[in-house]
Length: 423
Image (cartoon, rainbow, N blue to C red; front, side, top):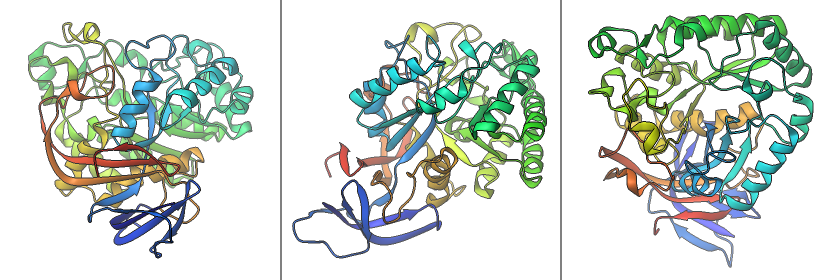
């Protein structure tokens, strides 16, 4: 038994911050604000903040196919150090996770090598090629929590319609990437004055809206459960609000990079700031923060995408997209807290509670009987980020050298301490 006392408890369900204690027993939260039982290990949290562990929806793990960029082990260690207690891994591996056998293999590998929980999404179409849907029923039985082709947007609408219809019949969650693929192909930045001055290939923000509108038409036609992996433009918000108001089973997410950075951060062609979709305008960034606060956008994730040095040390147009984020998600989110854009309960509603609820997982709550997946952190602890100190194998973070606030002090998974900063 572990008794965590003198903590500021963040409850994302009640949206409250209270001073209290938590008793962990048998891998679950046994009691809140009770007395310490005899024999329990007592940990004084020193008035720091205790919240449900982060459920990070949309992490790329390099196994199989790119273990040199990120292994299951390195991803798990980075997650533990970042307060992420559940990784929801993407199927964009090589080969893609599109068969029950592949899914069973990575599930065993995750169970053996990672200190945190790892659940996997499966590909929606075979090879993520958009031509033939996968065996969704068998993949569900093998443990898939959702189905997506990631940023390989399916252009065959009839195939997508069939996949949505079949997923609906099984109650499966489909995760889409709202982009019009023709307009966004080859784009490196968002269309605007900055893109013109830099001479970079660009994409209009309306490409996101067009892709989302197509997906919403299919959702309305099929009734499938749908989650948009990233909504990043203010132009898309009215369509998202209409879909929810019309009763469609739709949620939306956004990466922490799109909430804390904008298109100007690319500066002089800094490829660590090249992500998919590209960073947006400051007006869009502020609109997204407001949308998270209002609950229009439900989920914040890291969209962790490891890339090696060879993939990033290229001209901006040719460099690979993506940034690591498992360890930087929480301190980057603290920027939003310190700026007054979002409260801590609102942040953990989006980072912990909502992704767990959407995927039907029991995590993400501070409640008796809930899994004891917890993060203890200090939102005010300052530091300068050194990318070479990250536990991820790849070091492609846009926050390298930046002053940040927010340190993880301890991470618990099923009551076991998987990270300890020396509390």
